[in-house]
Amino acid sequence: MEVRPDDLPDGLVVADSGGRVVCFNAAAARITGRPGNEALGSPLQTALPLEDLDGRRWWQLADPYHGLAIANGHPERNLLLPGGHEVLVAARYVRSRPRGPVERVVVTLRGTEARRRTERSHAELIATVAHELRSPLTSVKGFTATLLAKWERFTDDQKRLMLETVDADAHRVTRLIAELLDISRIDSGRLEIRRQPVDMAAAVRRHVEGHLAAGRPADRFDIRIADALPDLWADADKIDQVLANLLENAVRHGAGTVTIEVEPASSPREPGEKATAVTVSDEGPGIPEESMSRVFTRFWRGSRRGGTGLGLYIVKGIVEAHGGVITVNRAPAGGARFRFILPVGAPAFLA
Ligand SMILES: Nc1ncnc2c1ncn2[C@@H]1O[C@H](COP(=O)(O)OP(=O)(O)O)[C@@H](O)[C@H]1O
Ligand SMILES: [Mg+2]
Image 1 (tube, helix red, strand yellow):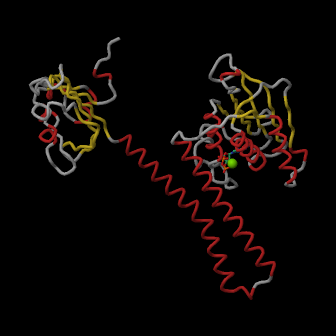
Image 2 (tube, helix red, strand yellow):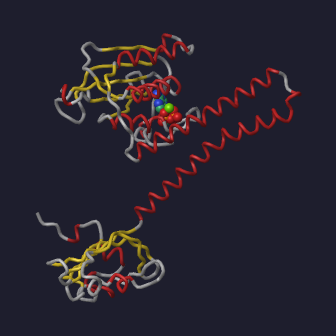
Image 3 (spheres, rainbow, N blue to C red):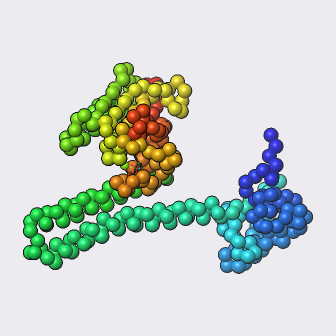
């Protein structure tokens, strides 16, 4: 199959053994703002008048045709086009035999917009995190300062109330930091899954018991476990995190009865592989159709009652790290319905 240079998403510039441009694709024309037919046949340094960040002319430094006969190119680096336009440039010097003359110089060009976008989203993340940390810490600082300055003037009840607020805010900061660490592991692909046998039905029951022990009425939960569940190998702690988040959301953002169903399913990735599906649905307001694609993004929250807005992002990261999928839609009773499917993940020797 033939790929035409104009089909490439990156700029491509090729010069022959004499340093004349023989290829200047459409992306190169767009990135440099110079029509391809004008560049063709002209010397490489005229067609691509690159400078490094100190204003030195790049081709004099790189000098593919007269430099070291062992040089085979340059890794990608940030260079400037006339007008200070930034561009990412990589080059290969093609020789037909080692140490022979350069026959072709192949240069790729990439705009810096993609990197800019990433940088902007990092900046936004930092701003959000700073804001999320500042509000609880402001309250911690305010209450401790007040208590220290006017300890004698408060009744025990007032003091207890303030300390409870401080405690809750400190807890919030700790949780936020734990969530941020999870996110950084998910984003960098370092989330480690340690598989062991997991009894999903028992895990679900344990979580519901936790809610009952915390004083929630028993009729808020309905557990439905199918017979003949396949043996599941998963990271027990992380599955706990997933269940805890989904149940907490269903109770806090939802309403009515929270129904948790566990049933066999087929693997979303490997046809033929068995899987376990867990569905958590409630009878609350649900998630508006237009927001469904956003619930799994970081910091998205639909209401003021929300926490950090990181829970579902982490849930999705954990499910996907297991090779599973998670979806959201509308429950028959109108609330939110979250469903995740985990392939059984049995060790190869047992499969
Ligand atoms: N069961 C639910 N019913 C209604 N809305 C929900 C439900 N679960 C999640 N949401 C919405 O999705 C948002 C993101 O959830 P999440 O990532 O867990 O963040 P948080 O719970 O910290 O707000 C919530 O703020 C809420 O608006
Ligand atoms: Mg949540």
